Image (cartoon, rainbow, N blue to C red; front, top):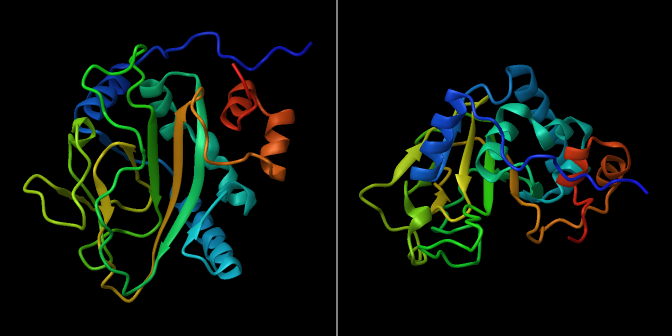
Length: 246
């Protein structure tokens, strides 16, 4: 009988750099990762997303890893995934892999969280907060014209939902990410995309992870998912939902 792909240890041994990143993320609910991908990978992802967007004709693309082989390395891309494991632990599953193409003229998004559950100041019995972390690989430099990602640092701990619409918060920040950087953020963090008032599209690949005992959004039934579940590493199998029950 084949052994299930459980990790041997729940937590990573943190380097001083990782420990600083984890502490920052826990306090503020987000983290900018420099050199998450190199410029050749940026160009490759741009070409893949342009091709996918032209074929699909949809601004929001689901099951991204099934669309083009050039997206596949994002599944466990080390600069980001190591930090995911440092925060969530090694029992990590992919929640979703998506991309968004924000065209010129699209208006401000409303404030939102990516998770539906409430925040409890005492956490859960096992302290599983955060339960979900999203990560945006921005393929175009974010500016005041094409629209930054707007966040409210520390709002992942707020015990109430974000307000309707997109009113200004005194403490809000506009993260002007550059191609090659990635922005990780807690699923409970208040965030939104700003309006695209430029003449060009704004492109991002979004890789969202969660603790492996939570329900995933993706069905993991495509050719890439099945290939990984059959022949990937134990870590990759877990990421693609190979542990169907506990």
